[in-house]
Length: 320
Image 1 (spheres, rainbow, N blue to C red):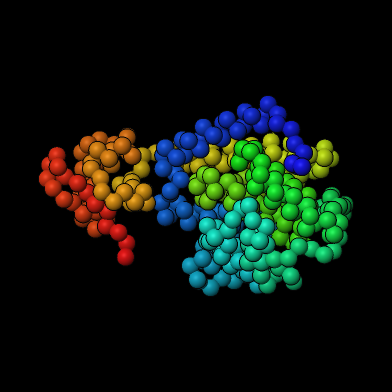
Image 2: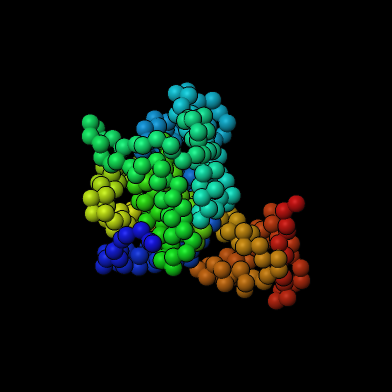
């Protein structure tokens, strides 16, 4: 039985908008950003998700930890960041439809922070906000079954990935399968579900928008709790994803630099190609710009040039 939710007009409208923006992001080659943008966005993603949980380290401090530099801060905050760097740095190793993978990610994320990291809770818990119990989680004896049903939903339903990712995020928060780390796991796993279909989500820090207004996040969870379905939370998360894509497109909606084009084209791993093939990927550049790009690629040892004039062919120099 699938988790309960209703597909509203707002949800359909948001899915359409997001799909269009994902297409634009791909056309602008933002699914394979420059190393600088990739690093910046991954740091923002880690910083924002941990900040929601009370971590006090800044983006600069997280950057320093990533670069193996010494940082002054609480041991717990530093360990949280180091664990998150390990998980976000190896996302391709996790299968979003696997409960085993889910537990492994939690074990890495919470290693040294709680006992029995990577194991479902065996105690009953409630979520406290201020001086009130905001949510009483299902009994611990039900957790294994409920999480099994949730992963079954991921594997078997034909629902859109955008919607499935939101449903999983909400339902996991509702079940609250761990003693700690549920919030960061919900955001991480939604990222991973989306990433398997849209590579841009590896670098899209929608957690920043959640962090900027945490109360709206908790309000959406509360509305869904009260309604007994995830509809309100789906609408909220789709709004967040839509706004984060707006931020990405407004930041990146400018001509790519030559180095960015060469790096992107190299990532396509075309073994042999012509200038025309290169221009099919970068439709916005002129013939002269394409020639200069390719010559720069030859000079840098990225490509090898064979033939002359109209018969010129370029070959990718494979990394050893």
